[in-house]
Image 1 (cartoon, one colour):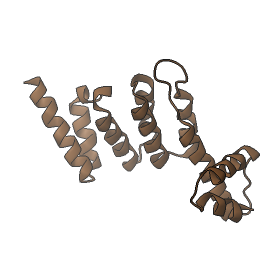
Image 2 (spheres, helix red, strand yellow):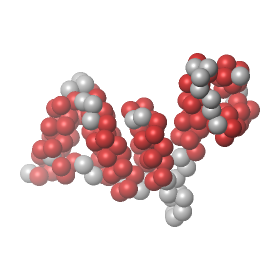
Image 3 (cartoon, one colour):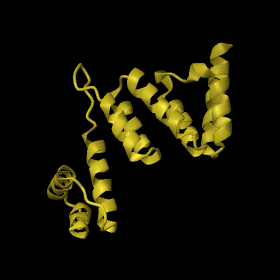
Amino acid sequence: MTALEVTEARRRLINASNSGQWRTVLSVATEAPNLLTCANVDVLWRVAEAYAKTDQINRTRDAYVYLLTNCADPAERLGTLQKALELLPEQQVADLLRFERKTGDKPDDFSSIRDEVARRRVQRASTDPKQTVSADDLAVVERLAENRTEAGNALLLGWYN
């Protein structure tokens, strides 16, 4: 009976998320806390998004911290940072990067997130002459421009300069 209730709650939560009914997502998650485990990373991501969409950014961050602290799959952990990049302020994303696991059987590789953060800083500075970026951020975008075939990063550097 419990398994059936969990399955039904998961279905309701996913349907509410797909429909943008963020308060319902949070309500279902509150009613079924056994859904909020590493076995249901997609549910955790949806709950984090619901917090963000209801202007509860600190709760969004808390959900991502839970995932990064307790869940072991490197792909899911990277996915968590990718989702955080879209929903959290840059400083909170930078704070989440400290949860990177660099040792063990399955080390993380959050370098793509660091690259994107640097790229976004250069992009913001390219449209605001009052902003400057660090030499480290510029070096990251230069490396990206050299190692990729698309012109976006090279154009970004051009606009910044």
